[in-house]
Length: 511
Image 1 (cartoon, rainbow, N blue to C red):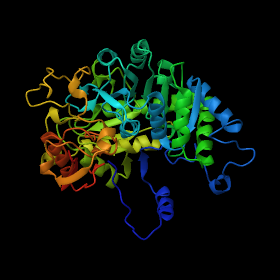
Image 2 (tube, rainbow, N blue to C red; image 1 turned 90 degrees about the horizontal axis):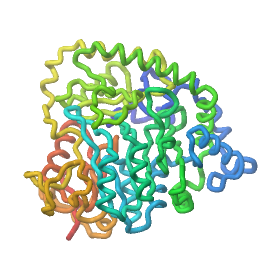
Image 3 (cartoon, helix red, strand yellow; image 1 turned 45 degrees about the vertical axis):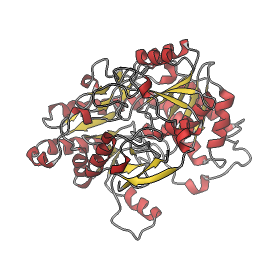
Image 4 (cartoon, rainbow, N blue to C red; image 1 turned 180 degrees about the vertical axis):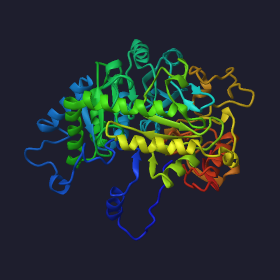
């Protein structure tokens, strides 16, 4: 969750951006260029903002300079083909899913996927089968998706047309892409990886390898999240023979704007050139600064930073050290408190606040001063009297990173198929009562918030970021859904996707 409204309501957006750009607020958030003109300087932006004119190619049918730029990116990442995205990773994810599955087919999706995956499932009339990642307790962070659970699901549903997972997660957890790809390919279907948070992977030790080089068939990356490129810029990579390329590119042409920004495309190409020519030097310096910062933080008493040692091998196959995930305590919901004090007192803008932690995103563009300011702030906060935090609610492990499995209080499936475990992807209770597309065809009605329990949801519900729906149209609304939604709002979060974010009412299916 991001918070910060300007003090002035009388300035234009342009004016406020100019003022903010000259302020001392340090960006521990995306985009990865960190407002650092050393890496990306568009001071002549107006003179460079063009459309498809002679000599500058066409993104929807590249034959010249854009085609060469995309080929350069493909070579850098090890892809067969790479395509620029100027509508963000969401455009690539939706194109990949719609192009890989025919209407009405089943798709296996990790339940912690971004909302764009669910939107593609709805748009394509697909039947989702969900697979649940592990949860690291008591820290409440989603772990890896395992190759074993993927195999179990594919055996249970042999008509699945494609598999989609998220790796790395918002918090930096990486799944065993090579192992999952080997399993998926035995069934002759493609593996789609939402690697939006991993465009920097594979360029240096400590950050993991990109899914492109580990066997995934379609990989989507947000260049702007972790590398020096303008917001909305992303890449879609193809690798191997299982990709229905013509179909994916058909939806790519539908979803991408017909007036792509040349500034955005130029920033991607500039970033690729930078990585090709200076990537090793930049990543070596970045890793050194990041390692020094993490080593400094090891003596903190009340603050804890997530690292590879925070997980066992079943919880996380690998971990991306670029994500700084900071806890006040693993058992108190103090994420918003930490976020606010870092912003208001130290002028450090974090990427997001969760219930019990904050995330600082870092990149090759972070400065030595930025890391120093963050460490000094954390050291001061760590020395504070933490007894003042007793006003914040204590919650149990069951509350952490909550996406429900449809089961009753006894832990048995509602359809009587047996005990339900999170990693038992073959369990039939993981299917929604109606698919999102089927739900979209039904009439809805508005009921009071309390009256929604037991009904079928007619809308999505999620906290953004990270934008992972914990309620999807066609799923049964439980008392636990309502409890969690109320708790989120009491803790200062806004529930998005619902028509009434004050939670006085919810839309349900009129069935």
